[in-house]
Amino acid sequence: MAWRVAGAQLTIFQWQKQAERLSEALIHQGVEPGEPVGLWMSDGLAWPVALFGIWGAGAVALPLSAGLSPGAVAETLRRAGAGRVLVDRPGQLGQARLVPFGPPGDGLPGPRPWRGGTVAAGAERLVRMARLNRQSPALAAPTSGTTGKPRLAMLSHHNLLASAGARAMLVKHQPGDLVLSWLPLAHLYALNADILKGLICGVAAARLPHPAGLFRALRRWRPTHLQAVPRLYEKAWRLAGGENANPESLQAVFGSRLRWAGCGGAPLPAWLAAGYARLGIPILEGYGLTEASPLVTLNTPGACCPGTAGRVVPGMEVTLAADGEILVRGDGVMRGYLGADGRIDPHTGWLATGDLGAWREGGFLRVDGRKSETIVLSTGRKVMPAKVEAALAALPGVDSAVVLGEGRPRVLALVLPRPGVSLDWSRLGNLDGLESWEQPARLIVLPRPLSAEWGELTPLGKVRRDVVASHFRDLLPPLAGP
Image (cartoon, rainbow, N blue to C red; front, side, top):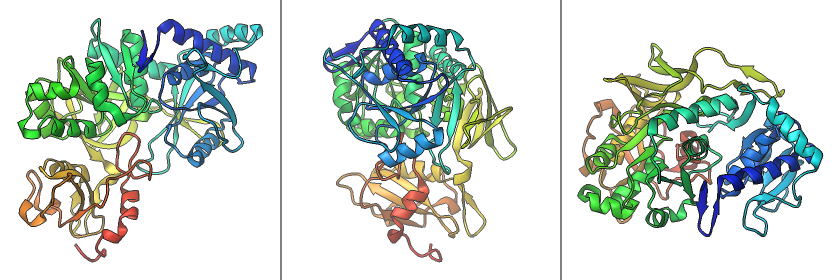
C-alpha cells in the first residue's frame, strides 16, 4: 500500500502501471525527452502518479501549486518553456496544451481521454527510461519568491534521490508506520518527505487533499508520523490546553500512535519545541531550500536539540561565511537555475542560501532568519524580525505577528490576537530575550489573518513582508514616526 484517501487507495503496483500508461500517452502526444511538462493538479492520488508518468516519458516535471491563479501558472509555464500542463480541472490556460488527467470510472488515477499509448510508445518509453542517468534533469522547481522574483531551480534525479535517501536513512521507519500527508505536493518538502522518502522506506501515507479537515484526519488515521509547519503545532498546542497540556490531551489531538513529528518551512519557537518534548512528542526540525532538493540539516529521534534545525545530513556540507550566512554544497544542490533562453546556468562550489545561522554545541545548526530580511533602523542598529516575532508568538494572547521597521528608529509589530483576546500593549512590557532596540515601539492589531491566496504567505506559510507592508500600509504610521 502506498497511498490512502477516504474511500480509495493506491498500491505500488497500481501506481507503477498507471504511471506507465500516462508516460506512453505523453509520448504518443509528442512529448520529447527533457521537455518540461507542467503539473497543475489537486493534491489527491493522481498527483504522484502524474509525477512518475512525466518522468517515465523522460520529461522534466514542473510542479505548480494547486492554489495558483491561472495567470501565475501561465507565467511560470512561459518562463520554463513548457507547452503542456497536466490538469484535473476544466478550463483554459493561454496557449498551453492542456492534458486532462484524473480519476476515471474505476476510481484510480489515469490519463483521459486516452487509454494509454500505442505499442510503439511503450517501446519508446523503455528506451527513454534506459537513457536516464544520475544527472538527467528531473524537476524544474519554482522557488518561493520570498526574497524577490521566483526562479526555477533545475534538480536532477540524483539530487532528489540523494536528499530523500538521507532523510530515509535518518528517520528509521518501522513496519506498520503510517504517515499523514497534507502539505502541498507541489512543494519540495512534501515531495521529499512524503512521496520519495515513503517509496524508499516502503511506508504508506494517508493523504489529505485539503488541510481543512486536518485534525479530524489525525483522529481518524492515527498516524505514527507527520510533517507540518510551525503554524499547525501552535494550533494543536492550544487545542491540547496550552500551558495546561498533558500527554493525554496531546493524544486526543494527534492520535495515540504519534512517535515524532517533523517541522519545516520556518523555525519553530523554542518554547513550543520544549513543550512538546517535555510531553513525549519530539518535534524534529530541519532546514532546507528548494535549490538543495531541499534537505540540508535535520534533527532525528536519536539526536534532537530543540531550538535548532539539526545536524548536517549525509551527502551535504555546511559552512558559515564571515557574516554568518549559511553556505551549502553536496549531493542535493541543484544543477543551476533555468534561464529565459532555456539554458541552465550551471552552479559550482558553495551555494549561498541567504539565511543566517550559528553553530550550537554538538554540531547543531541554528537558523536565525533571512539575511535580506535584516531590518536596518534609522539609528544604524540591525534587527532580525524572526527573533522578535518568536518572542511575540510566545505571548498568551498572540496568534501570529509580523515585524516591520526598515528606516524607522524602532520596529513595529503587526499582531493578530487569538479569538476573544483583547491585547493591551501597555500591559505587555518588554519582551523576554530582546535587546532594548529590538523591542517593538508599537503594536498594531491586524484586522484579519494573513492569506496565501492574496500573496501574503507562501504555500508553506512564510511571510512575504513587502506584500504585507503594502496591503496594510494604511495602518502604519508615517515613516518619520516610531
